[in-house]
Length: 244
Ligand code: GLP
Image 1 (spheres, rainbow, N blue to C red):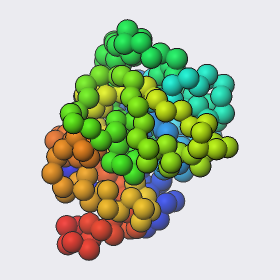
Image 2: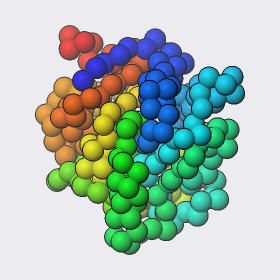
Image 3: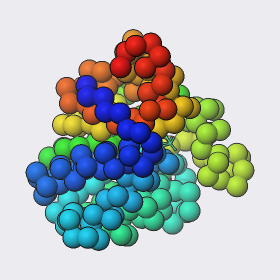
Image 4: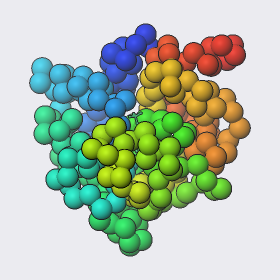
């Protein structure tokens, strides 16, 4: 586990984007796992800037996103399909990009997503954000770690946190389709980005607490190649305890 401190959001975005740049340079036909949420937006802006300057070419890169809300069509403004198109895909040149279907609730369609990843040789670098509940993708706290892509019921806290993107709390979908912990852990490298004091406690639990499905991100302690880029605010609780 490599923990890298960033001064602020912009610094975090730039430092984390560099890992993606290096991955694409090292293996131009790599497979990237991508994430939504507000945390990676600055990172995507940096990638777009490099692409526009001709420094980063995605033409042989395939991407697979972590998750999608159930019941939202790809053109729905709050869907993760729409988010990814707006924040990244329409500005760059991926060979192909995949987001799980929010209408793919049935187990066969979920299994098919994992199959597509496997057919493409697996994920080289998986980008992750961290939810307030300790979730990664939409893997919420529970009694066991999930394996493959599956449908989940969202935690109340997640519905609350994500309601800021919807007109009202009632509009937030209650279910999502998400890569499982097994899918994520199979990635060859993982890049976790975290910012803000609001994530400080949960980041400490994830990285230094017991590995437990009650804090899904804690499983990352068992991954052989994880880089965490976190800003000073997000690292505050870890620093307070002298762990960093
Ligand atoms: C959502 C996504 C997660 C993301 C999390 C954190 O629930 N499914 O992949 O990491 O939100 O979001 P934010 O970066 O906005 O705090």
